[in-house]
Length: 379
Ligand SMILES: NC(=O)c1ccc[n+]([C@@H]2O[C@H](COP(=O)([O-])OP(=O)(O)OC[C@H]3O[C@@H](n4cnc5c(N)ncnc54)[C@H](OP(=O)(O)O)[C@@H]3O)[C@@H](O)[C@H]2O)c1
Ligand SMILES: [Zn+2]
Image (cartoon, rainbow, N blue to C red; front, side, top):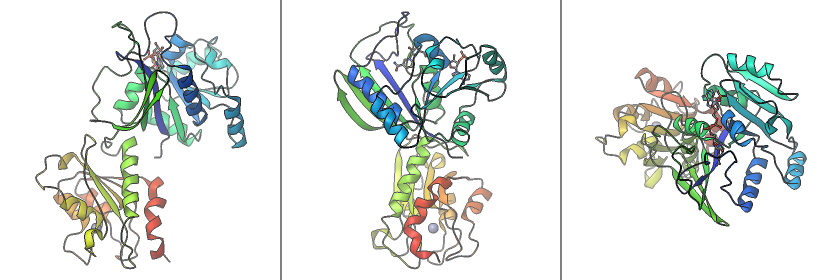
């Protein structure tokens, strides 16, 4: 299931707080950074905040720049991104700025919350969607945003309760964090993340930027998903495998494939691509796995990313890649494209892996990229 690209955006004090406990919202960012946030909003299809932030900050969440709104309209988009909130309780103040500014609004809630929110009379242009009884499932929420509302890029502007869940459930693709040079010093103030540990190892730092007296830091989570559930980082690693496929020496008799082996904490263990290192028959997964010690304790919890389904039969070597993956003890494979019958008829590498208990996740949104370096082989 394709999900929107999820960008978590927040400003924090030097001691890691999102706000103080006073009645006014604490201004952490600088004017130039508010303008940067405006630009990020303008590039998003939707902006999401938790109901706690509506209550505490009463934000408008607008694109303030008329030029950016005009550019959105010129691109065929609404002037303002869709505003989204989540509320289990449905306790929402109809007087809040959220409902009376900008374009369309959407509330994700529970069956009980939906009843209450409908009674609150939040006004025209507010869509109330129940995701069922009990607590909200974030994956269902993101699928709905993507499939029903066409959201490709979602910006999440807090608060901490929302950010923490999206990070811990491996649903965030990117984190844009601004560090403000002040201290809150109040243990009762809301924190950016927590409680509870994030089981995803180190994040990848992709940018640092000084903006007046604050620093913008951009990170990407790196941890593979679990079982059938794809993480934001799964998409990053599969995209890398597709990029490696483009580096293969050309061939008329074999596919160009890229592969990456990644540990559960997001550490890249090895990568490979077809026909690398002057070996005319080596396969991508085979080349990557050959770089690893078979006794490496990280292999049983690692994920193999391969642009093409691992092969189940091959003429060039005794063991096909699906067998090599099983022998390495890897239990999870992410791939973009099922092997066509070009060279081997009905090769079912995914079936072989699944039959042996390995989870195979197919992300069809990367199929075009995986096929691109093989276009000359079809037809
Ligand atoms: N510095 C920054 O960049 C920044 C940005 C945003 C917010 N903040 C600060 O953060 C604080 C608010 O943070 P917060 O953590 O209290 O609130 P929050 O994350 O904005 O919202 C939490 C609320 O969202 C709903 N919710 C979240 N996950 C849910 C789930 N899985 N199922 C059902 N409902 C769910 C619940 O609403 P119900 O209670 O209605 O059930 C919950 O109480 C404020 O002090 C604000 O100033 C700072
Ligand atoms: Zn192979």
